[in-house]
Image (tube, rainbow, N blue to C red; front, side, top):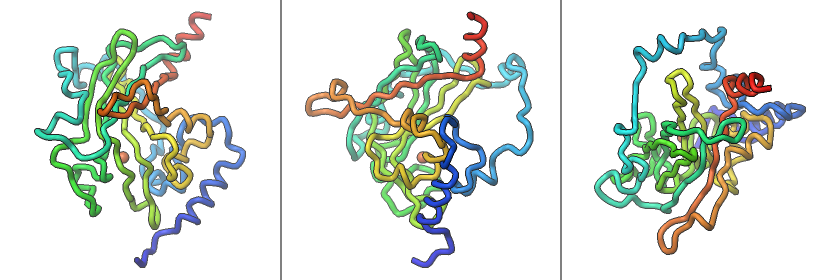
Length: 249
Ligand SMILES: [Fe+2]
């Protein structure tokens, strides 16, 4: 197919150039040219700090009674069994000192096994699975643990460059205790051949930091003749955690 988009070779060269000498940067760069649209949508002015208490007056609220346990099982939500590889993703949400973060609202969204989202913006020719919504949520337990039963998502194409494909991933949102603390990230699956080619994954220039986004296969979580298990812990080290640590010292 003819295309005026850059080739993977061009994008991979840009990634390599930006990675050179950039070890130790653990957060994705807001402005990472190989990820084309990052140039258009990152903030150009300093962020305005909202008054957290003011934001709480208009922000969504939730509590234990608002979350149904069925929402953590994406394989039973839509009136039939979705197609694909059944998996469980389990882990803990921890603060920077390794303490569990309890009662945390964890939300996920993902493509189906064929790599298709139910979204009008996703029109690529892969089938929609009418038994799979691709969204789930739960609250962390007292030990900070969360678990989702779901279907392993497929990789999908996007229009960043010619023949661009995202590695399989699950989007995660964590709300913290206040709306203004929301954090969003992505979890990946071990051994994905698309890691090296993906400008979103590679927007984090530090290899160890990238590795932390990849779940591990855990055979103890797998269940006989039922599903495969993956483990992924989320460690929050925001400014709040840093401040707490300094305060203790
Ligand atoms: Fe995605």
